[in-house]
Length: 265
Image (cartoon, rainbow, N blue to C red; front, side, top):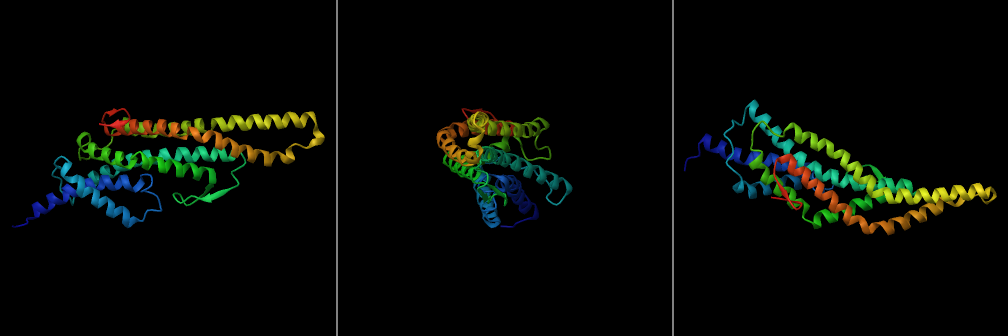
């Protein structure tokens, strides 16, 4: 069998464009896009996934690989994958932010730990919430759902230099506000509880200044913070389900597919 240049280029194009989109997803997606995952593992996983999903994809357009147009197409494929991966990062960061808010309000922010994903110090409470969110994300097969969305995106967003639309980019940017909102809602119970405790300290100090209530206020705030974490941890799954559904809905809007019951279809 003779392998012509045109045949080799056609085979490369059928692999290169899906590889770019899958690589963009794995580059920033939660768990797989962290610094804990070596680059070689991500590259190998991207190649393996690309070879598995390539037969399921529609025929790739005939675009000359070594041209300016192919560079624009490659950039668009990367952006689509990165946009989908960022949605999972926003999901995780919402819980990290909620944990940091709770830690600062309950005087538990002094206990810090190096964040392996960002390489910076973060409160232990935020890291605890991050580990819980990561385990739940893997338990509900979030990584498989995002990969399925990438496969479906080739039907609604075929390989071209068009890429994401302006409304899709706006919805992605607007999801940042949803992330802050979800973090605040999750930490709101702890904020109100600590506000009442500090208010009680203020009343007691005003009524009996000689007791010097604020000298023990720090220890009481820490114990109250641990109690609040214990009482509010039961609502973690409810917050995750609500946030995960919004992530899937926004992801479906990005790639112009319909979501049924929190699942892409």
